[in-house]
Image (cartoon, rainbow, N blue to C red; front, top):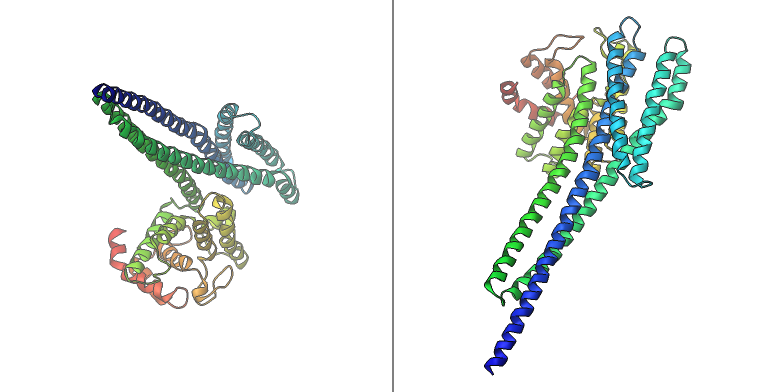
Length: 440
């Protein structure tokens, strides 16, 4: 009887150790799969994403210098031509690196074809702009405009479309990889529990070794999950930095340093936070909404990129014709927001950013532009942006005016309550007077 028990015990121990060993090997196998997923995602997605976003950022810079050269005389364009050439050289060097990354991709894959399309279209775009520059002083404005519409603008649209598509592909791949890693983690944990119970019947060494492997797996899974979240944050940071870069570039055209977008964003945040503390617009003012409006505020004047320098930087009062051109920046801004981030950002955020750019010059009394909305027809985000934008413009020095004192600026905002501005927003803003003075 004892012999039978001993043999049975040995069999149980043997089976337990065997299953435990298989469990250890199995866990190692799934851990290696998750590691491979992460490193592949890092090398194939984030490197490519950063590469094309750098190209797009430089293209916006190049486009700005190109517009400056076309709109300036030969006497004043020397420095801008130098900056244009330097930017073009940066883009061409990036395209060479871009081509090296493309060679590592699977031939004929969707991503490889997108990369090839971006490379070809950007090279053609640069070459066509060289032709456009040669036309500046010998061809009519109509011929230049026709050449731009037929050759240059379609290329830029294809480049933006390709880069946006690449971002969508990258996001989809990240989501699929996260799902796979979560699945493997869940499967591994379930299997490890069974293996641990069986190992408990075997010798102490097997138990300790199995426990060590389990702990190592938990740590590795945690690291992989953390690195994936950090990588997603990095993509979001790249996109936000591009948006801020474009906003700063627009401000620099009118002699601003970028502080305007930072100050107005902070004023918007103070008003939103104070409104929430007071219980106003409780259904709208979620933490997500406040974050979206604050992050979208820097894009409020992005439409000014389409306004000629001669009007944007005019030191005196604009003529009625010039002011009509200036007013087009609001509607243009709403469209540009969708063109830049429409396919790569959350739909709610894009909608809020477009509303701010499009409607921040509307007035409470309906006499604003571009659509003549009035009262609560104007989106809340744009009503708040209007107060922040006008106040900062009043207290800042511009090419056409001296700065106004804080006291006079607050008085002017107050006097326009119910006319230019939403009275409730003005009330909230005036209650923040001391805090704003103290900070700025």
